[in-house]
Image 1: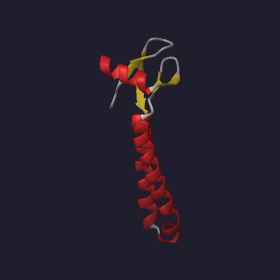
Image 2: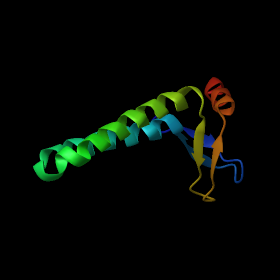
Image 3: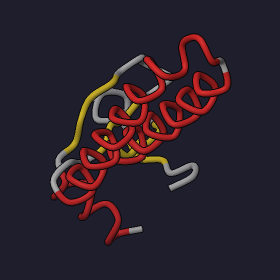
Image 4: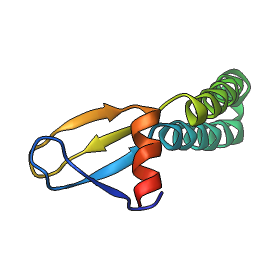
Length: 97
């Protein structure tokens, strides 16, 4: 789902299609990186790094849930629209393309 586009409902121009599960998986990756960085620092690593690890696990579970339940976010740069589409609408779009 690198650079998928969809027609915007408002202005009918091409808009970016962003997967909800991909967003959560990116946040999971960022929290794991933060946990690794915090674990290097001895003074705060033992207190803060486990919080980031727990957050990463929760975000990974939410990402799996959104993979099957959630849809996607459509973001249009022309008219600055940002709206969600359902999983059904996203699947229909994937079938046609």
